[in-house]
Amino acid sequence: MDIYSSEHRSQLMARIHARNTSCELLMRKHLFSLGYRYRLHSKRLPGTPDIVLPKYKTVIFIHGCFWHGHSDCPIFREPKSNMTFWRKKILANSVRDAKVIGKLEMDGWKVIVVWECELRRKSVRDKTLAGIVNEIQDITSLPGDTM
Ligand SMILES: [Zn+2]
Image (cartoon, rainbow, N blue to C red; front, side):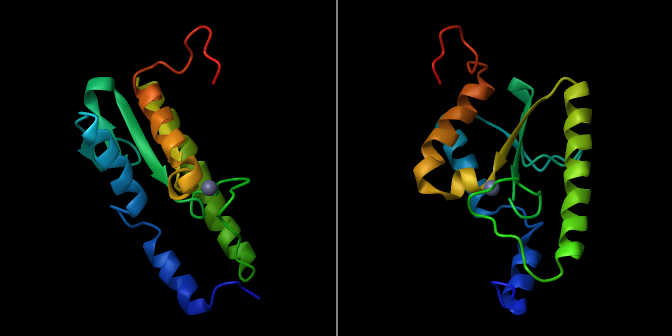
């Protein structure tokens, strides 16, 4: 049995490609409050990144855990029906994501991928947001960093 009714499941699926999801808005609000300015959903870049910070040559993707196949995800549960169908779709998306990230990095962009569960869960949200800012500022690997 699918843990979701098929109706609920198709609603979830319909939201998959949605722009401006709550996680994305949360991320944007946080960056904006710290003074970062960005472009959104830039179609000129591979994969149409959700957030583009030209000044830092950085792009941020906020990935839905289901659709992008977050492995060992603490919130995402695999649907129990049509498993082959979803697995195929999710695998195709993961392959595409990897290609997009490769292309962007080749062009000198720093690519940050944030998973939905890292923003959705209150217990880890602040740490996620702080980590992203560190990454934008390139202070993730300072000598003596104990993180
Ligand atoms: Zn996840």
